[in-house]
Length: 251
Image (cartoon, rainbow, N blue to C red; front, side):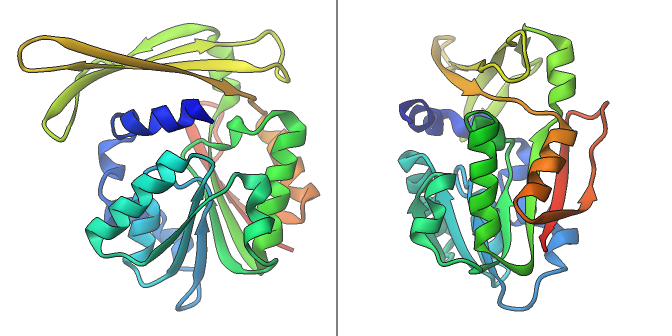
């Protein structure tokens, strides 16, 4: 988990401009949020630096934010304090969630930010989805976003270098992704993320982290959702799109 703790220090350069402001991040889910009852109880179980959790709390929801990284949870708590938002934060990975919350606690669970591929293989992924499903009330919904791994694997191992500087808090950086695509779907893949921060004097401070990844096909994800008692209501999956969203309800 140390890699994810270090990643928290450069996370601000990895999220898009549109998701930096909590209110705007939450607004990107307006369609699914309209399905919630008033005073809904919501879990963001891959909270990252907290932009979505804080945005949801700003809408008057009862929000819990969890992450496997202690550093990410700390960042979320700091952002909550900055915005005066009421967000309960808990360090927990997906499989630990039932240790912290009763079954059928939440009206909606968010697992966004392309995080599910960090679950270790099919067994780890199903265990993570099972935990999320357990915490949903009957009729509650899981909102999940994912990379289109069919597209990622088709491109093969490669180096992706951003074509512009990313500016955060008056600092500029170049973001680099190195994709190490394994021969088989079920094999462990690797993504190395490097941030090259450029200061006004021209000096460069570089940080990089190597993360493990276990990709999955869309039809495999659909089958696994069904296996844990979730039925797909809506999907934006498109083989030519970089990312997609799935909304699945607790049967």
